[in-house]
Length: 372
Image (cartoon, rainbow, N blue to C red; front, side, top):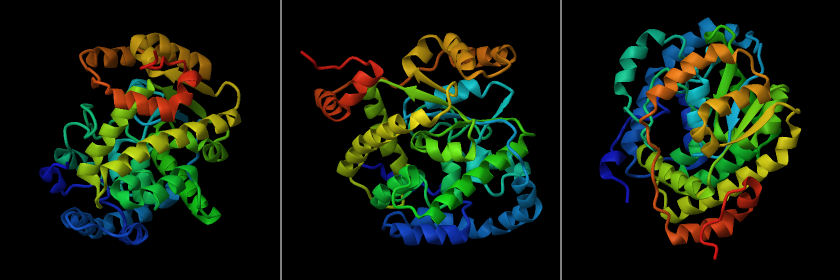
């Protein structure tokens, strides 16, 4: 059952969306349910209030961003949600050769350059940790590209969480491009490209390090934008992915949803989305040029982070590992006390994962539980 206090939370990642996009989102996704009006009113008021900032941003920066080149092929960290993508993103982002989409950027993707002087003030209103786990929230820390895309275009996985009644259509269109017109797909690609260009512009041309689980099924589209892009695919024990994803979806829905959702729908989406995302990756990964893909088990990264980081740089032929190591070592020392969530795995969970996700055990060499 949802926590009533969390339902009353007004802050929302869509607060700086353009009013036109906000109205379009409401229309396409069936509006806002009773009980979530306060949250929607906050978005509406803030959307109107931030309109002058977006206008000034377009006037001062739109042309500069559009003319920005992306000099280095991005590195895309992909893999199903809760597979360790955040941990790897945090680790690699310590390398000064990389830039990343920050939380600040995702909140204000079409005005963050204008509002830079306000960053310190706005950070006071952020929660200290993410709703799905105990990871610290930092305004300049690396964050998921998809959150910015949710502000910039009508199709994003985050809209599955904001509008759960329309989650299936949002998922299929935003991630697999199913049912999208060519015009809609081009709009999505242009929004993503402009986001990457804006981040590149703001970071003086450094190589983008992206972490975005929905990109796991978008390899073809990403290669159309960046033919030499590099990919790191994260893998984790399917039982833990199931439990962690389910918990994440529940927690995020409580603080971000604008519509009611059912436990049965949530469970089915967790099961179906994993199958679709994984199959899509297995179908598309052959399109990645040789030497531009590395597959990495989360458990191996946790057990030997230094060795796995070296393997990443060697496999993808990334330069300057020696320059990155001091900062990576400091990060590892700082996080030495961090503990991942511990889950008791119910026999019914084991049975369901075995039945629905069984193909992944052979694929990734994880042992099945519950086998006699």
